[in-house]
Image 1 (cartoon, rainbow, N blue to C red):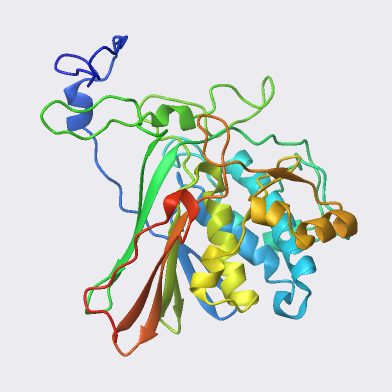
Image 2 (cartoon, rainbow, N blue to C red):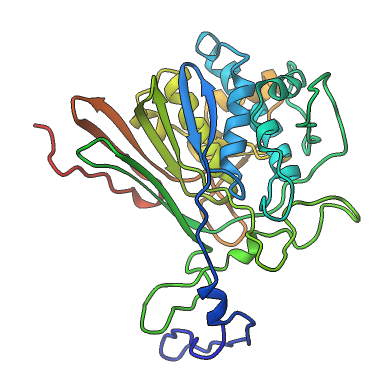
Length: 359
């Protein structure tokens, strides 16, 4: 920014400040947009999340539609997680190919969330892991066949984010995710206000995946970069039953998706579903696995039986070493009671509190 923008420095620290082009008029001209949420039906639940330019709603929704074709609860845990990883791989290919700021690019949101489109992606899943980067599908009707097109690479994305889930005594639920991208964002604060400015411009793709290729996430004036934020509120027969959201850069949709699968399909309590070892497949050559997953017999079975490959996550060492994100959740217990859920150990553990604890 110009004029009154000054970095906050530590004594003895040297900060190089580059001139910027953002002005106060840019900030005055900003308006928050209120958009309809994304929606898919899954195992009798209505799953609502964020619409583009956030990519989580369409990515999680498409993956859930793909997984709807399998009876995960009747499968072995190994097979269920294989289907989870492959559905994730395919939905991330479509995320990268189609999701951007809908004011600047045409985002086929309805197609990405159409069960008929999901069927054309599900039919690509066989008995072995697909090789990434897999090609995006065709989310435009008619949805036929098992199309395979040019491969779509996974762009980098990272930083740090917070998720808050809460409810009031009337049963209103808020699922809120905010981010400044990297730890510390841009490293500058607003004079007199004390909050950090983000460095979200890094969420744009600054070059297409290949020369001349279409990329919905290239930068433009006034355009918002694609994000992965996407807290979910799940309803059954119009009544909220749980909410979950996460941090973790491009692994946010995976964290939310795996928590839903763990809870809804694999029968874990929501605290156990959130705490379970995570693995994230973002249309990459290998899936990013936490140590407890990477070193498990389950990971060995997924490799020997299905050909899945894993990379060990060592934690959020910025800027490049991402991890299967950290989450918060809320379980609706009924009769005006709720269970607040946060990470037990990831990033030192989270915070979960209620106003009036139950004895």
